[in-house]
Length: 125
Image 1 (cartoon, helix red, strand yellow):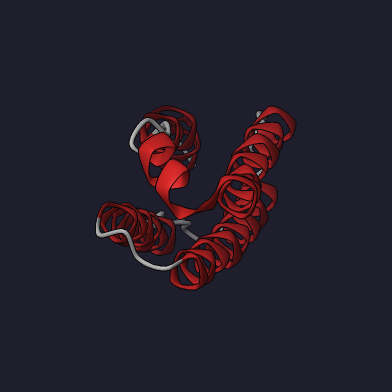
Image 2 (spheres, one colour):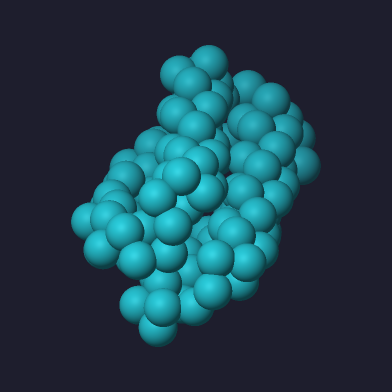
């Protein structure tokens, strides 16, 4: 069997975190609604690309937790879509105040724990 590695996934994690950090910084700078919406759309698109790549890898390596992992992906996408809806509904000021409390920890926890399980599975192949 061909050796599978996590290098592409790890690079995507770094890019996703960078996008989220940029969005956080833009919200704290009180950027316009249009700018924030563009940034959220970029996060949504990249998140979907990343999850698609990760799910293809899970299929390729017969990861036993694929269904529960995919459910976590669906929840994280719903969270990001909620960001978009929140901005459109409350406007920039309230969004920025609310965004300060947005759980970046969920994304980091997913990478550190759920994706670590995939990494450990691949290491055993």
